[in-house]
Image 1 (cartoon, one colour):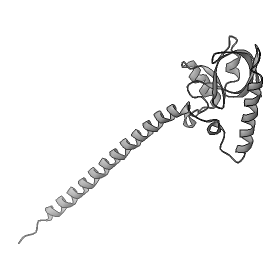
Image 2 (image 1 turned 135 degrees about the vertical axis):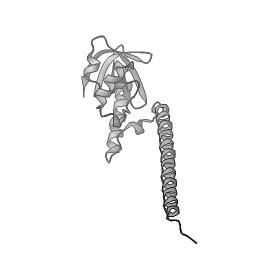
Image 3 (image 1 turned 30 degrees about the horizontal axis):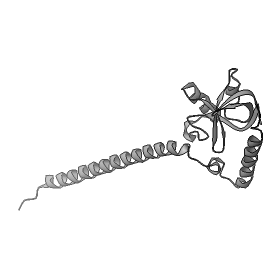
Image 4 (image 1 turned 60 degrees about the horizontal axis):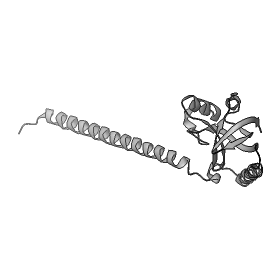
Length: 169
């Protein structure tokens, strides 16, 4: 019986091709699954953005109790000041698209993100816990304090605050 050396080379080549094909197949499967999960989480996150509770919007740190106390005080101050033609509102200036949850991987600060979203069709809003109020201002003073915690003096009409003045805190 004569040995055929080419059969060993053919067997090794066949095995190598099968391993590479299997690896590429699994790679494509996992990449597709990752994309599907990311898309699902992204759409779920945008649906949940409007249903967040005030404690979920607060920073997660050791001073969480202090942050809750500050938010509670701001809410009380806002409710106390809502009894006249001009009211004082406290919160953070952001945009209606991202609210208080700007994408961390965008490489932009919250102020830059808010300004960009407003240029792309969103509106400036004042966020305080669960409350989101659209802001209406003719002087352009909102853009200067985007992304900052502020006190807004203005008139509440429906869900929109007609801004008289804004001061950073």
